[in-house]
Image (tube, rainbow over all chains, first blue to last red; front, side, top):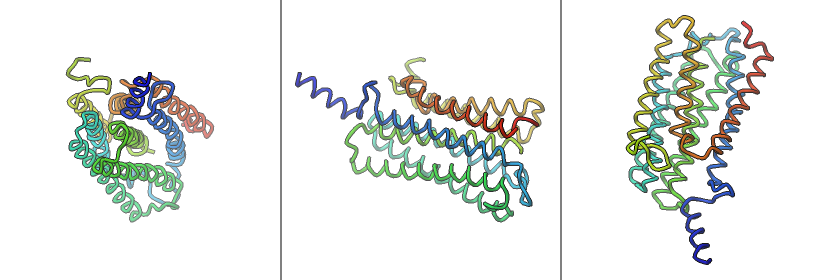
Length: 204
Length: 99
């Protein structure tokens, strides 16, 4: 009996805390959170779709969007999903060196995407599209800005995960911690997949 | 799925993920091509299909929903479905779909 309890405790320590469903509470919470994030971005995307034609005196979307530049940014974020999943598989193999390597590459790709977004925003402002110029401008900056904040938070999460892996401060299941960060990271990627098509590729 | 592409119940091998990424990159290139090439009446449907395919591939393979518990899929797709329903109704209320 005592042996069974010890085994269960060891199992919980290895695989994180589990609910009555036998699944990790942490993963359940993360999926629930991501499901709720769909509602947040759904609202922002819908608002943009409604107001993208309301340009007032400001520039029209087709006058300012730089599709080749945004395509490269999208490709960078898409490839960061590959490096993230490689970090997760490395963590599942308990290969800390490769885990940190792929987390670093993912963080660099994420930072590159954010750099591109900052460049895009400053270019748009120079071309006359401020936050309050038009409803199009307000909804565009709110949507892509919110996404940018999510990517920035993701980069901070990646760097923090690398830090705690290096200091060996993860008490539970290390691969699950990396996987949870990965789920968040892939979510910001799928949101961008939608934004890239609906905002940039489909003309207003 | 073969032994070489499957990695226990956690998902696929690294090579499998690289293949998925290459497919995603190819679809992205095809999406971008719609900006330069006139797809005519296929423009909008093709973009929407490519967007959905990319979305499902990332969620299924990179986020492991294909290999994980169905409860995770239920939680995520419920949120997504609810968002789609609420905002399609909201957009319809504002006559967004009427040209």
